[in-house]
Length: 266
Image 1 (cartoon, helix red, strand yellow):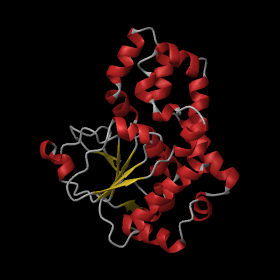
Image 2: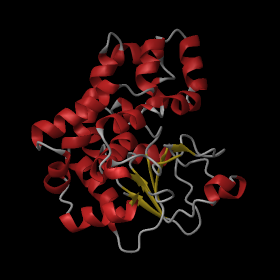
Image 3: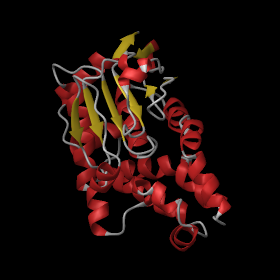
C-alpha cells in the first residue's frame, strides 16, 4: 500500500498498487483511506490537494463527528455512514469510538479494559462490524459509492483509520481478489502511522499511571481483531462474496463495476 505523506491528515493511504490475483493490481488514485479529517487543509497540504477527492465516506459516530467535524475538500461530497450506531445505542460507546477519551483516564481504562478485556472488546466490535444493521448499512454505502457510474476518487475513514476503516479495506480488497496474506499485511501496515498519531496521548496516559498494554491494545491493530471479523463472515455467510451480496445487499452488477473500475493489468 502507498502511504501518502500528508501533513494535515493522519494515516492517509492509497489502496492502489496492491497485488491481486492473475497479475492484476488495484488501480491507483481511486480508493483511499485515512484517519479523521478535522485538520485537513488542502491549501497547506499539496499531497491531499493532488488527490482530487470527490467523495468522503465517514464511518464515525455522531459524537465523534460532533467533537471533530470533517473538513471536506472543495468539490468533494461528504457521506455519513455510521458503522457503530447500533453498538453505541445498545451499550456504552465501544473502545473503537472513544480512543482519545479512554487515553485521558487511566482509572477508567483499567476498569473497562484491563486484564485482557481490551482485546475481547475489540474482537466483539469487529464481529459487530460484520453483523450489526448499522455496520452492514455503512459498508453497503461504501461499496455503492464505489460502484456509482460517476464515481471519482473516494476516501473512507473513521477516527484513527484502523478498525472501521480497516474492515472496509479488507472488504474491498477481498472483492478485488487480494489473497489472505496481502489483506493481512495491509491491515497491519497502519500500526506505525497510528502509533505516531496517538503518541502524545499514549505518553500522557502512561505518565499518569496508565497500563501501556491497554494503550497498545487500543491504538494498534493485531491479527486477532481481523480474524474475529473474518470468522463472523464465515459463520454467518460462508464467504466474503456472500457477505457482500446477501449481508450487505450489494447486487452482482455493482460488484462487477467495482472490480472493473478498481483493477488494472492481468
